[in-house]
Image (cartoon, rainbow, N blue to C red; front, side, top):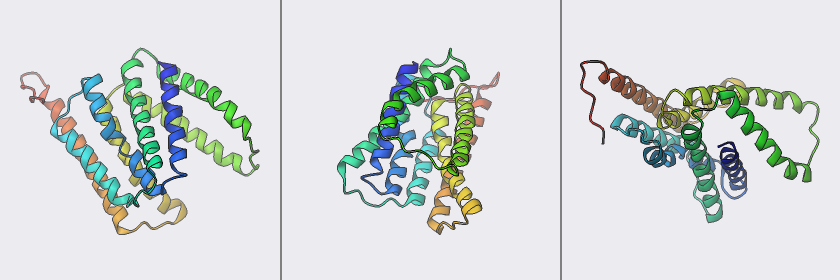
Length: 229
């Protein structure tokens, strides 16, 4: 399972950075935010997760918010689109593989082996084009490392508790969170379309939360469960 997750993660990361050489940033971001749409059939077929209307509505509405906020430019490079789609599929597969095969592994084990195997696999190409970092950059990279560590810890802990479809849909929250950080830290002021898209994402998460609460309420003793497709 660790080798599978490492391979898929490296493929996804390589495709993401390579796609940036071919496509506008807004289009690459939009394609990668389509991960929930890719994970949907995988979670349904492999994990047998339920797909009710609140989950489906939240998933589609959230992606609509991404399209509105990112305003992707047209693609002229087919290779770039294929790379971005392949990366999206790889990262969605990491999620499904972790949920399916990582149930007996602890969160720390999953984090350690992915970090170790990924570092060893990335070491040869990194050494081939190694560039020393300026001293002033170390603080930024240290902050990125700490944030990545906390993100992985929270992500894996949550994935052990909730369905993969819910996790991928909640990933849409990264978009409005990023816009808010850009405003507060860098003083950037996104246009109205961006905030409108972020609002759709928040609405999608609210629908998802309502649907999950409704489903859990229907499972109470004496209450008949809602039929699922």
